[in-house]
Amino acid sequence: MITTVIDQCLILLIFLIIGFLCSRKNWIHKKHLSSLSNLLTNIVLPAAILTSFNVNIAAYNLNFFVTIICISLFLVAFPFLLSKLLVSFTHMELALKKVWIGCCTYSNILFIGIPIIGTLYDEKGLFILVIYNTISNLFLFTLGIKLYKNDINFKSIGLSLLSPALLASFLGILLLILNVSLPKTLTTALNELGSMTAPLSMIITGALFGLINIKKFMVSKNIYIFCFVRLIVIPGLVFVILNTFITDKVILGVMILSAGMPAGATNTSLATIYSDKGPETSQYVVMSSILCIITLPILMYVLSL
Image (cartoon, rainbow, N blue to C red):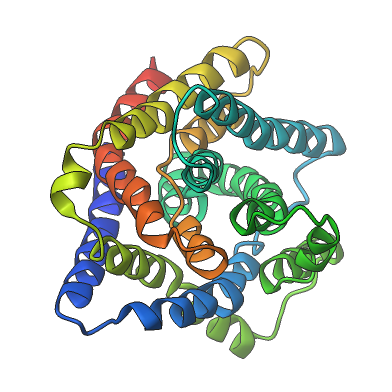
């Protein structure tokens, strides 16, 4: 099981290195990154989201759904409020505070989570993850976009509900409820397209990382503090809180592992599209993706006790 975690993390790091080298060799230019980010968020990611709903809901009752939705809302709100509190004590510029909050709140659920959760907890675990991912995406593509855009107009949140990622989520929920399957050819095409999500997102992140000063990155205390909060503090506190009233080991395991995932690469795409902090955002994604090779196996060991 721990081998699965390490393998998935190393695969993502390979994609990061490819993106980094492409940037340093000028095979991917800075001007291309916004277009690639749009391709990811508007085409590739929606395909991955839609295909993630290919699960059977017949075995689960209403109480199960309500429990997962409530915990999912907590897992989005808790890191958001905690990170907002923490950055209020720092002297970072406002734009970087928002990057900190975004990367703490929205983790790499889909890319690392699905292979790991699928191996550990089978179909039930994947279904829990799909619900959590849907709730997380609802906030990421509404309040998350608002966060990166620095937009105080709440009308923009309504427009964000029409984003391809959320439309894919709504369609997936509808197909799930109606127990309707898409045609095999279309499903295959969407699976192939969705499989590009992890490589493309991490290549974009690696390319953005290639634009920064590596020496400054390596000695940045802020990056290491972020990783400590994202990878240790958040899952640790979530474990303490949920362990007091959640008796279902699968629900507990899925939610705590999800809380311990590194910063989501989609943050870099949104920061690239809606602000000028793409390279800075990539630093949080890169370092947390590297360090989670150590922290995720430890988290799995704690859950097995």
